[in-house]
Image 1: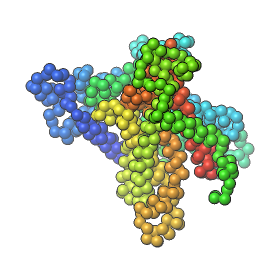
Image 2: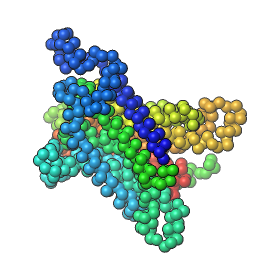
Image 3: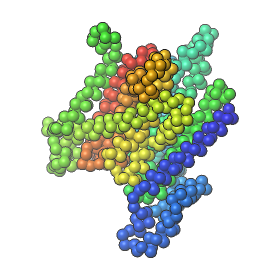
Image 4: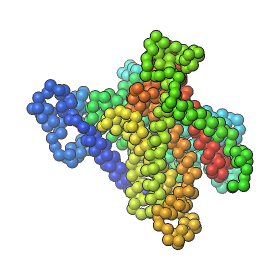
Length: 313
Length: 284
């Protein structure tokens, strides 16, 4: 188990280094000089030169890569070209919106998907199974930003239960903060819950063909008990895999949904940065997103060990 | 198989498959028509006809804030969606399948490891993030959307090809082919590929429908299709500020996306059930 852990940590390290290299090289390939862009067309050569030095653009490319990497590891992401503030401050300020949104929608998706998938598996082939599967099929086909717009139309414009967008900020209380994240979280959770419930159902049905389930049945356990006591935990492995894979979709979805609701999260930050050609911000946010995807998949691999004792050997 | 009559073969598919297939064919048909004909020219603005609600005899689905015919825009949007999704899926197949085959034929080799770890790495980049990176470099365009979704598709096809090919490589007829003196490439093309074709076809339908969703998402945030090209995602982005007084602007493209994705997914499910009888019992 320890060697597995080391091997996994090593791949985590290598993939982080490689992905940072890819992102750095791609951003380096962008034509144009950030310094002259920041200063506008009226800048003299000397001021551009000075700013290039200040931003560290004069150094060799390899040095700049390592500076960027070491800077990020020590929490220094550099200075935004347009806002002239440290990038880590910008990101932190946005993360307190994006992170709760992602967690909230993931929790919501899990709370919808598990009961739905388990009920569908328990009543396999019955009407309720058919309706849950049909609903999930539709849920997968609905683009979450469109669903978000429809939610706004119904709950914000017609019923006036929620605001159509914007964020109150956590200063004005946790309830108001959560309230402004409710509709975004619901729209993000819908496709996730749909996919998850299908995976949970088929995973449970797969485990139901195992020998120990027949034993449990022979013992006289009810179908419900069999599913909740014996099949459920064993069915978790494929579910975990999908959860890990879905995480990147969730992040991408959050970026889009933030635009629908005008939430000041990472998604808004990155789109503003693109239009303003604030490449250092783009670079850092992309690295952060890729880092979190890699990290989540690493965590999922570790969770396998907890769920399945056979893998611990 | 050949002596089974056509009607029997048709009956082997679940009826829902035909439902999906007919709608898919219809959408393809509409998008082909849009190349030569649409009810109105969407590059011509008619402000006096703006925001006509749907059900109008002249404009079946109504008009937008510039007085452009929604039905015509939906038709052209279908073309864009299908074009992007098709090209991106094609990219994924052309690059992913050979990678998967090479990895499978060299299973256990360092080459296999390198290919698969490389795939894992690409997989850490969500399509949206790839699109963001490409847009930061090249500026927004429909090509970026195709490249971004296509790159995202590569590891998907590589993984599924490798997995399926591995089990084929253990079969006796591969050994026989090797004895005949065929090299790796010949074996892969002549013997392995035909045997994993059904899995690849089903995966293609999945990636195709995902591609349509991804295109709409990218165009919605402005990273994909650019005006004056019509796109369902762009139409939704334009409709957002007018949703309180003109919800039909959001409904038409939204429902188009849902129906298209749903039809392709249903078709793919039916195809999978038909091609893989082992699955038939479980998913029934």
